[in-house]
Amino acid sequence: MLASDAIAHCVVFSDLVHCTVGQLIEIDGDEAHHAVRVKRVRLGERLLLLDGEGHSGTGILESITGSRSKPLLSIKLGGVERSESISPIVEVWAALPKGDRLDRMIDQLTQLGVSQFRPMICDRSQRKPDSVRLDKLARIADEAMKQCQRPWRLKIGDPVRFDEAIGDSDAIVADAAGDVWGSGGDPKARIVILVGPEGGWSNTERSRFVEVGVPLRRFGRHVLRIEAACSAAAAIVLGATS
Image (cartoon, rainbow, N blue to C red; front, side, top):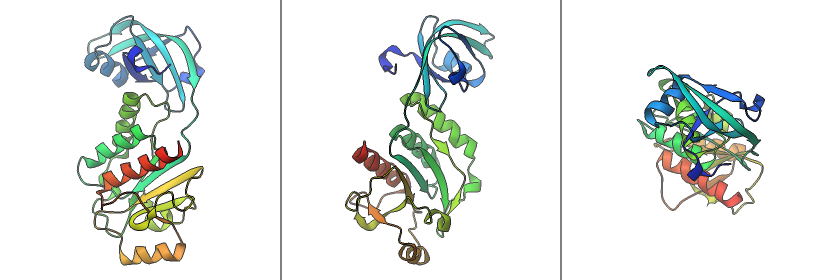
């Protein structure tokens, strides 16, 4: 179903699970506007529909009505399938990078197959979660989901404080001082990767690592920026266990 050479465009449709073969699905709002004005879809083209909850379907574009500013698409559905979620479940909880680097990071984590991202508040965090619109990050994740034709969306979770994060039983800390990933029997059903701020972990936080006993794991030869560390760690964990 997901053969990209046969798909003209992808749209998000939240009620896909309740649809049946041959049903006409109407798409309006931003999804329709983007399809018509940006992607320039044409009648008879094959479109992919995703609900972000594991369901995907393909259909033929039957009509484009409405107005230039508010188009309405009618898609004849060919069928619906459900995909299993990516295993293991990999979540990334991280301090926030500055500027548009965060946007690029969310795009990359979506493409890689990360299940959830949560902003993490650390002693040396330079960017606070309240400076970021989480709904904007969710839109970026959905655009990346469509681009890579991923059935499951990357969820944007609520901010989490460092002390709460290291208390998660599935947490590991990405840190250059740790053992190389994979050397400690790491693969399991769920993995939460914690990535600290550009200023590094504070001495208090490092003391808490020892106190709690959270594993430290190294994912590269060099000290990485936040967005590089998040993407590298996620790629290595998912690649090693796929």
